[in-house]
Image (cartoon, rainbow, N blue to C red; front, side, top):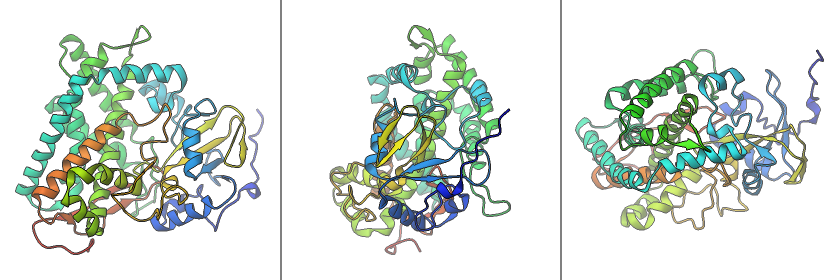
Length: 429
């Protein structure tokens, strides 16, 4: 067997000491990371980074809005397979759990996405929109009763979880267990400041995912026997190009919807409360005419916080982009967190401005076949919850700094103290 080719480290160009392949970079304060992205965007071509430890391959960082958007819309050259995360899913994990739709390209991806889209019928979506408002009202009712505490537990995490469970038709008796497994699957993908520091990367917590998929398979079998008016029933009776979806395909989609749908939306909601607390003028503007400014506020929260920091692509065809010619087999990373602060696209990109227009942020992906399937649902959830909170929880605000989880994958909030009902300062205390 031939020895693996060693990539010379002197071929790595690093701007101002920022090494995106070094786990220590992702433990830096967020402003320092954003500053490093700014320096990288000033270069004439993407920088190639070489991990110094482990089996991970070198990668080019796409940091400019135009480059991230262009790569997203050229799946023939920048493929999601074999995986969009770091590390890439192991072949055995795909065999056991099924391959997530985010890691599939071409006709297979198009067919699966088309079938899933058809399961979200107009009737189901209309019912979901009404239910979103009802869930937001109930959560605020409970918040008023229980009082302040951790915003993540009180509302931010529960809002997307309850909505998705209702839409899918997950019985109430299964929800506590599934929520615990989602938390457990996420717990082991972060940098823990106590004990041995571990960088938050997706792909761990597989035991929890396995148990969740077994539970979901049982619900799917029941829906095949007795269908209901929910997404699970629609999916178990759907087909892709004439064949039924396998249990692994169903399980992989359920995991994607529950984990990705809950994580990204809960983080956006939490960052939204922090931003509205820290920018009282923007908050006052939103409260002055919620219907007028709500869509802009949601888009600006997503742009400013960028819940998903990056996804990876594998080059499958020679392609020139951003001043560099990429060759088949090379890896690139689409850094949405950098693209959403690109001053060539966004005036005063570090400012939080709910009236920003246009706002072509890449918080839901850069377009193309992998644009976020749940973007519309996430926006509705955020608007419904903020409407209820701002209307009924007088003075609701972040009462302390958010407990951020260091990550090279998502902008995750672990905890967030909040308060309401009294006068409040101009920002978190």
